[in-house]
Length: 129
Image (tube, rainbow, N blue to C red):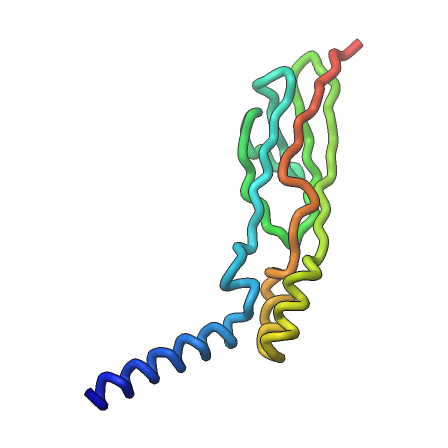
């Protein structure tokens, strides 16, 4: 019986240490966000930072800590451009500070504090003249 209690305590302690060493946010939140992209004249090509990522409608999985330049291209229509930026989630910072020094160091380094400012883009493509 004593052996079981000791093993349970060790497992609990191990779980707490892993939690603190990995940072709070990275355990709770992914480092990526989903962005739904669509256009009124589908299909249109969707480029992210110059790379073709698919045709509308498409769901993009983007890293939260980066800034993205999105372009919609379709033959016979004007190219539409958007920029997706990010911000630091104040709630994540507060939670990390409460939990201690290690999460405050780990989470900013991994980019887990960041969130994208948009989770969808729906554009209207205009015909070329």
